[in-house]
Length: 320
Ligand code: SF4
Image (cartoon, rainbow, N blue to C red):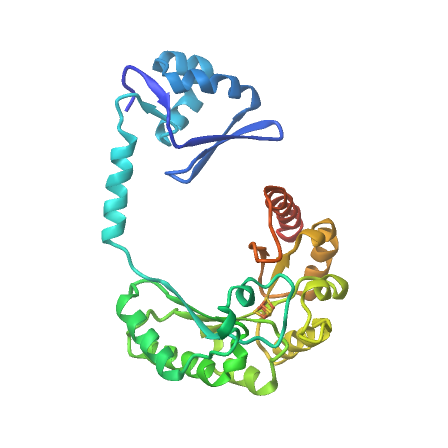
């Protein structure tokens, strides 16, 4: 690969991170860190330098890392042709591993940031639920397309999927059947994402009988005052107590619920309080969600940046 001239890959993006320069390769999905002063060298690298010059600029070891990882490429190397080759190879081997089943349009809550309810067609808002026969057709089709050597994930979503308990139970039982028949990978998981307020003992007992086949995620945004600001019911009452009751019931009933925490712009300054609360709640796992634009809310670039910084701050505490 070390030919007469090296140039910076067209896929490399540079970011200043504290005292370092982070180079991210968007095609190889890889990162290399260099001293911050290296930024001044990037323009020269884009034009092309000899391998000797590159070694003078970065030292032998870093130059080898940069070339081994395709951050520096021979100027005759056709990166677009390589990309096209990979796309052709991957597209021909495409398989499905995740399927969402939107079991119910309706939701018993009316969260202020809900993009799902916001996007319902006006005349159809919240009135459709999925029949068992539709779920069966979808799962049958999915099992023919899914890669049998890889675990699949079926996500039961809504509205609130627990509103359609009949099809929810069917989808879980039928997935289990497809697994036992060898039509889906043995480690296939059904993942339920709900608001927690409709969880009852019968539901917990049902899920327990499927063990690790089913995972349960509950939307909780933090302590009561944070959660209730956006997550209200149709009578404008906060849903915190009911969501926590569902979370507690699931936990005490032997399930391992995780928490799905949405970061609204007004909650970002409270990220430390949210993190303290998450630690206290001891979920099996957690994820942060960012808001999407709705007809009432516009999320700008500043929100994306602030939310990312808040997540990094929380991650540093949660990962110790
Ligand atoms: S619980 Fe979920 S689906 Fe229901 S209103 Fe809130 S965000 Fe929307």
